Image (tube, rainbow, N blue to C red):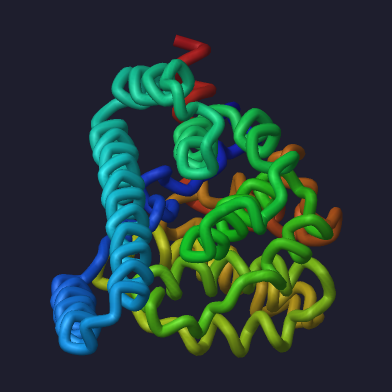
Length: 297
């Protein structure tokens, strides 16, 4: 605990944040491109038309150029993903990865900006937002836009900027079939944004739709439980909100920091409710007693 009265906040793990999508060109797609290209060339040759063969040759050269560019982008993207995965090992590894991305020649590319924001998010959310906010969402690749919005929503919520969180949350497509793995995390964060901006019913319905994920289940479901407290409170279900808060405290009283600490800018009445749960919880009282005894000793 931060002191005998204030719990520490249970911050979202950077490991649970979305990484830049790995992407890539499926082998089946490449085979189809090759087959169609060969068929077009066979037709052009069979016609004996020089003009047609010139046109096909130009189109083929253009296709090769596009494929080379795509492979180059994929290779760079995978390099960034490798850095992010390695950065999870320790704070030192995270700082090293951030330095490498910042000093690289592509430091201001959309993929690198997003990766740098993720690395900064755990230690300096304001700096992470400072990287992302000036960049228009459309600047990012279409496959990345929901991930960028998700990270921004999470950062806004952790800074108490609920109106901004709601704006970015509304840009996300939670039912994209290509993003099933990230949906539980995204839905839990969007649900908090909804609950804290006057949409508790929608938030509760969204939370009820979450299926427990296989990866990072504990961290993601903790976020869902936190969102449920906000939703119950906003729906004027104070008894249910207190029950949810008590369940969180039973697991770890530091979870209550998410509702008590001033940086989160929680509604004063919910803050009071969480504080009352903290003050009456046996674990918190034992810790206070232990700290008092230690000081006297």
